[in-house]
Length: 391
Ligand SMILES: [Zn+2]
Image 1 (tube, rainbow, N blue to C red):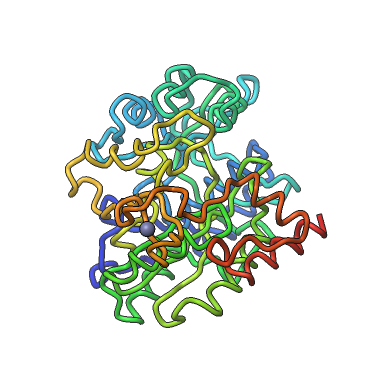
Image 2: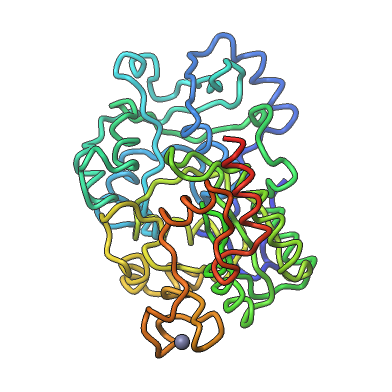
């Protein structure tokens, strides 16, 4: 069913919320035909992109990008239509496989267990210049960068075309928190929220991020806490542990009538500034009007400058992005202010700030010690301590 976004706080990117789920009649037809079609097995990353496409999280994309869109995104951070878009969404296959995938072919897309998930209607195949792609999107061609590594590991031929979803993969995690864009939009409307801020995270929420979220919530109607649960790099904290952290934090410290917790099934790409734009556009599709951009948003290692992900928004006319970035600086508890503060609001030097490195926090948690309550809520610390003991 098409979602009518005309009463929503913000239109989807490009104006229409994409929905690529098959109708029951289409599903029956494709299931009958599928055994005769060439098949491709998708890994977790590709399945996650597929899910984001079919639920409209990547609107206006209706499938995997063709060469004109790919080249345009790489060269000018816009789709061929001119609409802002910062990260190529592509399906790479081995050259040998690509031979069976001529334009006009329908391809059965399967999950790793071999179950039929979707049909890809091939419009073209092409050989991308991956070196050009990674330099433009990630700002580096270093194969140690996890996003670059994922692009290089993809097949060398990209196969493009719209997709039709027959069924979501079985056993997707967090079903009760898996709201599609049409569902978050409906939830915002139901609550009468006109201004909604989204917070992207792939980490447990400690006091610093709680403070940022609540500063934002002071000036809008509602908060969408929107953790990414697609593939991340191996040393990030597992999604189920993070979800438990969010659950206990929200229960005791957030107003239930102003907060929605839902998951974003997208992969992490660690593309820094380009990914900040991408994260914002996805949240626009979920119906959010504001988006929190912190320091080094979506960064990894030392590839990006601390404020690059905030500055990139200034390169576009605000109406081309639509959703409003809210820029936040480094936050902490200051013992002189006796409050949470940031480098923007606290005049005291860092010796008065309760700040712990990631390494220090991990060390404390692994010994069963809670970090100071000015750094982390005890309930959150306890979830992390339990998970480290179990692991
Ligand atoms: Zn201070």
